[in-house]
Length: 158
Ligand SMILES: *[C@@H]1O[C@H](CO)[C@@H](O)[C@H](O)[C@H]1NC(C)=O
Image 1 (cartoon, rainbow, N blue to C red):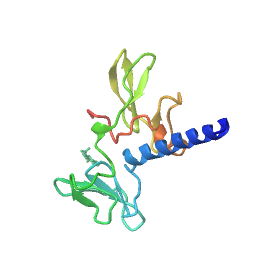
Image 2 (cartoon, helix red, strand yellow):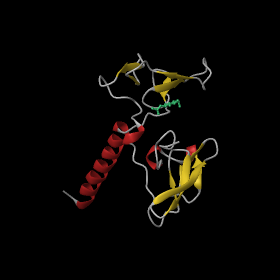
Image 3 (cartoon, helix red, strand yellow):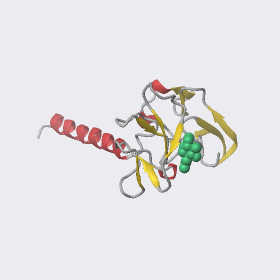
Image 4 (tube, helix red, strand yellow):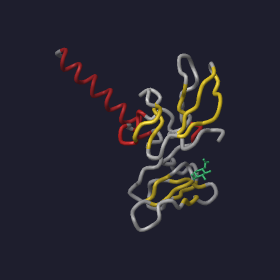
């Protein structure tokens, strides 16, 4: 195999696995699905489309989870939720030389050594936390799913 061919193959493997991780991860939090709802977290969802006011949040029945299927809520364990629990999301922790870390999609907080200090700071509407960009929060269109530094709805102990 030629060197360039090999590179091309390696490159496609990287891209394919990257996409696969995205699909298996909690990629569908807050995203309108074909069943016309978006799962906000494992159990709550709101409607998409213009027939219903978008800020109304519904909860699946007890022990059921929000999915992308036509029948939105399914018993826990029968299928995986579109938006997996926050506990499985890994968010950056305070570590030198970080002065701030994202604590959810839309909040960040100051670090004191390896601990969080002070209170959560909220990004403006329609922006996502992005410490790596050195801008703190960037427009949602400027950021791709894989660049979200802490893919949580809200800080853990908020
Ligand atoms: C899920 O999201 C809803 C609406 O934002 C919120 O009220 C609820 O507490 C959340 N549940 C969990 C387990 O995070």
